[in-house]
Image (cartoon, rainbow, N blue to C red; front, side, top):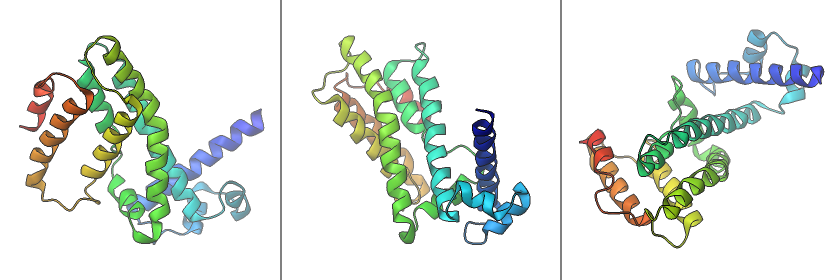
Amino acid sequence: MKTVKEGEVRKQEILMVARELFVTKGYDQTSVNDILKIVDIAKGTFYYYFKSKEEVLAAIILDIVEEGAKRAEQILKDKSVPLISRIMMAIMAQSPEFEGSEAIRDEMHKVENAKLEQLYTKTMLKRMTPLLEGAVAEGLEADFFHLDYPRETVESMLLLGHMLFDCNIMDWEIEEYPIKIKGFLTNMERMLGTGEGELNDFLQMFA
């Protein structure tokens, strides 16, 4: 057990160093040797955990999904916040919060890295859908939401939110975002079958 635990610590150390280098130096400009120098391990040790630099980036993307999911879990647990606001905040919490995260997203969206974008989307849906399904079930039980396809509605909200508000996918001007967000939230009311204006308080954030 000790060896397994130490191995996991070493793996996470590699990922932390690689993430920092990808952000500060750039993915293309970072070599495996750059990572090795900082972590202070032999090349063979690196390749025991990862087959390539690309595999390291994929693992970082999976970590980003997990970090977003954990933020969402905490948000959804807070019953002092109105349910529909919790759901919207949980969706918005999927945006990476660490400094320089744009560099990771830029790399993910390159044409040659299309598989990484697919990896993020599939993993995010798999991780987040059950969390939001639970929140939607809470609304259905309270007769607050009215919809026939809870899972599909959650998947649609997650995909739409991801596509609309990823600056690297949609090439909108910054001044366009407030109205896009308002439209998104209004459509969420309709998808969830809640009362019109239920998100008015939340909308004030983007007024």
